[in-house]
Image (cartoon, rainbow, N blue to C red; front, side, top):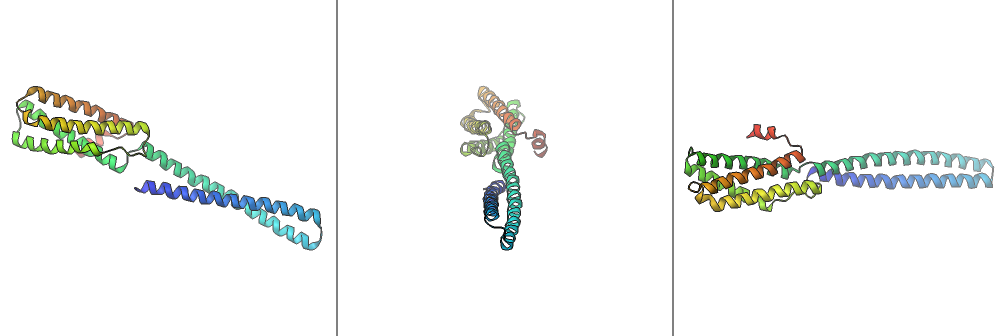
Length: 217
């Protein structure tokens, strides 16, 4: 559970407390008002007037405190609602790390495959890199978008995760043929472009600046 989730839970708890206090003070206000009316109609003695004066002060304090608690509850509740909205429309820390790693995995894999295609790479080193990357990509099969995100956000992200996993598995199966089978190599590069399109949809949906990822590569 990250800090935003804790803030939401604490915010909701504080909001409930403020609302309960607000209800209590408003009930106190109503009861004080009712008692003032009863005393006022029953007697006009000095003792009764003192009690009425005390009840009026109690009534005014209860009204002020009730309004204060209500306003504070509304304020904290609004902040909690904003936290929920922020979580629903932004990537969780884990999902952001997955996308960062995936961004580099895709480009490393593409670079090695293009090197093989052009015959300008050390095959042994290229195969080591490819094997590492496709193993990492296959691991995306167990990754799922945060359930705090919107349904559309989860759909976009889970499609990306699934595509990354399938890419890793497919390239791994053909890794031994990549240097000799041009069609397999071409298909792998084509699959990378397909996943890049999924990646673009994720970055667009969550408003992630691609240039920031590129500058950190």
